[in-house]
Length: 245
Image 1 (tube, one colour):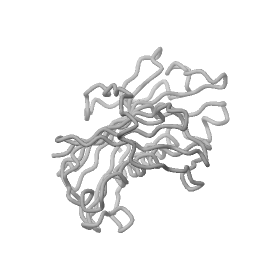
Image 2: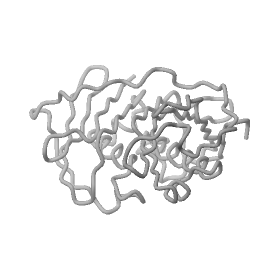
Image 3: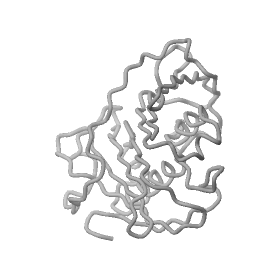
Image 4: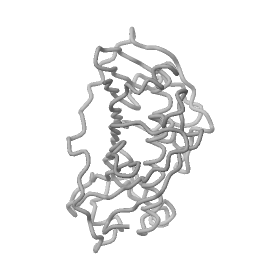
């Protein structure tokens, strides 16, 4: 592990593959979420340590760019690194990469925050993150997160979705990757396996609970599509965009 960077070897097993036996977009989100959790545990800010302090990690925004494809049983290296963050900031970033040898396959970036015991967002310096952490100067995605408008009308409702027990994580909310799976279900298996997805960006607006009835919206555009998951009252839970190559 380089200074401030955590790396892990990943084998592209069948559960990570799409219909073309290639690494699926959902798998990339899954791998990045998993490696971030492992790194957090190693540096003392994992889920259990945070829970003891009455704190909880929140992923506010995430984006993954898909540059090249990986195939079944390929050996990959996943890497993650927290980006430097001002002590007074309440939102910070973590970056990711996925490589096969020297070939860069995907980049990712999440914007995160910490919800404290009083149910308020905490400043970075108060979160228990190691004060002497050796932040890396490695760069990945540097664009600011897209600010999505909640403007998809009822005419673009494509289906309903009931939050399942298997969608729920240890925070007792719908897991971030579960939202991505629901959004990607707006595409056919052939579309997902085509390799045309160049980027997917997701903004998490509100948590969802087991049994909630959600509505999924999709607006097809020439360069991709706009997506949303909304609660029964019309409030956005997730806003997203997929760009096609």
